[in-house]
Image 1: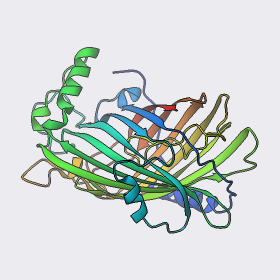
Image 2: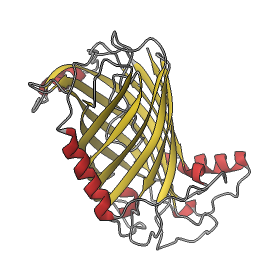
Image 3: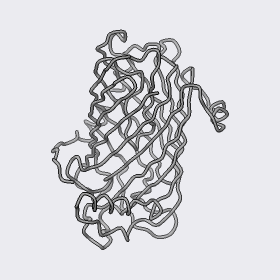
Length: 350
């Protein structure tokens, strides 16, 4: 869909990574506060698309639903898994588990060609279900709030991901030209991805005041047949009645947006704006490197990829809605432009 174009440029490589480092160092000077650990269950929805910037290429569509139980609820053996996990560097106070289901879609820039385009990324889809485990606690001494997230995705790529059918249906519905090259997509293959993230929340000022600011840095990794990455980043947010969570995440983030209604949650509206960055070292990207088995199309990926994020979030006690705009640096050698996409987000807090 052709809506509008945001002509933005990300910082240069040195400026980008320098900004990540400076932001991380600044976090050590901030003070924490005791968080509330009686959060209820949450249902999270994310829809991402590059239609917000009038493009239809590369990571072009993603959708995800996730459900997190209330604090302390860990069925289906998750409590046993939690008991095996170490607690280095912080004191876990509670945890909860959940589930997710989603689909991602990737295409080359030229959807009108029926031929394989060797210099552009291949057509690919990823349909998956996930199991989530989140633990919350505080650091020793200064009691800085910490969230630790584990997510295991099991799914399929190729025709069984139904990405071809999904994009064709949307294009028919919207009256767009139909994509012609899905016959060249990566072939069907099961896959998995284990994601881990640890995040900290630093209050920048007096946390008891309605108007507040926070810095939330994170670090982690993803490993599996779909992706091998190391990641580090963070966001700064400023707003009114900030929720007791660790910020909004996009679909391919290492964790799912948490939070939930608690005794410490505001009973009236709030909202905030935020900006952040994330850098990743990429050891494997299955949607660029191709299938593990057999011969498939692939492109030479970039080892370092950076994201810049800006957005807003509105909080209505039991409902949150928001938007994140993502600027992503090139992911493979022949890619000459940065990509952008929008992420619409909603969370129901029980």
